[in-house]
Length: 255
Image (cartoon, one colour):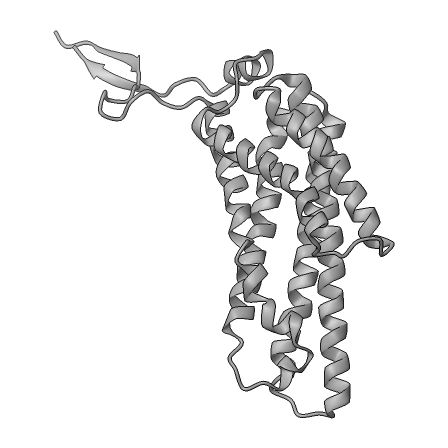
């Protein structure tokens, strides 16, 4: 007599052991963090439009500006993705700080979009004739908008993000403490450089400003790599999240 029973559905050995919900969260967040580094080529792609005020009259193409804008849009969305993905985990440590991190990331993304729009609008202006003096002034104005939004969005906000996320990860011990310590050390350095830039003490793209940004860049990159490769360290937070994960599906087996 055949009897039908229900047994938990499991993956075959070829597929391996299923990921826990916290491991999937760490993996997705890590990938998002690594994606945020694809905008590095914009330092060169935007060179012609930022360094030559008569670029709007030049006969060269504007594909580099379009590609740079596209890359920065991806960075803005990936940055928001890091915060949204990590929020369910971080709120278990401190919901207010976790929500602040999400808000800061959204604000950062908004500023990136504003800066990209200021440069892309110059591509449109190349197709319309106008007075040379007026167009040169307009070009300088749009580039200035981009530079200021870059300072506030891609320099100041990462320092704020490092303070929020670094504190949450340091207290929760979800990753080795050396990682958030790097962010917590780099944040004041970058903030000081941003304030100095704001008041004209140093150049925005000077060597000193670049050096001040290195610890934050190292913090975000190393965090992304760690989350992808290792994930979160075992902790009461991860144990609590995995404990409330949906139960395994069941399948009918005839014996």
